Image (cartoon, rainbow, N blue to C red; front, side, top):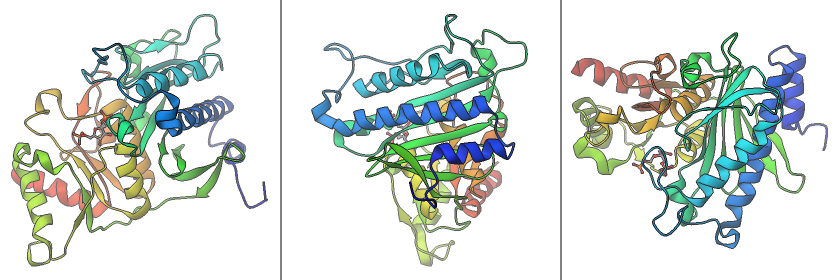
Amino acid sequence: MSPDRISLTRYLIEEQRAGRIGPDLRLLIEVVARACKSISVAVGKGALGGVLGDAGTDGGSINVQGEAQKKLDVLSNEILLEANAWGGHLAGLASEEMEHSQPIPDVYPRGNYLLLFDPLDGSSNIDVNVSVGTIFSVLRCPEGVTSPADEHFLQPGTAQVAAGYCVYGPSTVLVLTVGHGTHFFTLDRELGSFVLTQREVRIPEDTQEFAINASNQRHWEAPVQRYVADLLAGKTGPRGKDFNMRWVASMVADVHRILTRGGVFMYPLDAKCVAKGGRLRLMYEANPMALLVEQAGGAASTGRGRILEVAPTQLHQRVPVFLGSKHEVEAAGRYHAEAS
Ligand code: AFP
């Protein structure tokens, strides 16, 4: 590898040498990255891999979220569980695909970290060949806890020691923060290694692009109705500029676009999901994405407060999400404040 190409391994060794991460966290991130490479290969096979379509027998399989499980959801979850079991860096893990968290099996040594993940986010897009991804969040296992249970995972997003995602798109990109900036690592498929391709990503504070599932418009709360209506009013409206819209319906793809060129991503409360608290899960979707976005100079809000400061009460709880370009997220917050 030429001297100016910095691999993920070298980046993590340099972070450890600088005292910003310890050896166990370095190992954890390497193991997760290796698992993401395996998932990338499985996703990349598409129809040739025999892994498209719904999991389970003819009736399909429903996960703990009450959502249809895809074969790749199950495979990705298994890849992450197996990769992280034996290393001695983790005390336990939690997954969107598992009702409860799992302590590391007794046959292996346990470490001081907790790993939470959505093994394959955007899985409704798999069968139509649209980008999907893996999202992960790392917490410390509370002092003195040797066999962590669900309640030990219920820490606010500010407690995350690392967070990231891997987007399986035209290229496979691992996006990572260990609390010192957000960085992109692109998978070199020939060498099989992640290469640092963008250090210290910065999200523009202003944008003319928003992302929301507009089919829910009639279900939104009043402040969101007004906020989006003003975006749509464009140059002649109160915002005085035209806006563009994107909606991939894979959070990792939408967030990656925003980290790359700015924008605001919204999954607000709506009449369909208000009883559940929102659509997106706090612990392994909103929190890791919020840390990545804030580390890149953006903002991440529930509309009524900072996502990273939400005090979790349930492992799979959901929250409304507004994240991306700082000034636009703040604007959405003002519409909520005025309404209340
Ligand atoms: P799936 O993993 O079930 O496809 O859900 C993806 C997701 O959690 C998130 O990645 C998207 O932003 C959001 O749901 C899309 O929701 P809609 O399908 O309601 O647009």
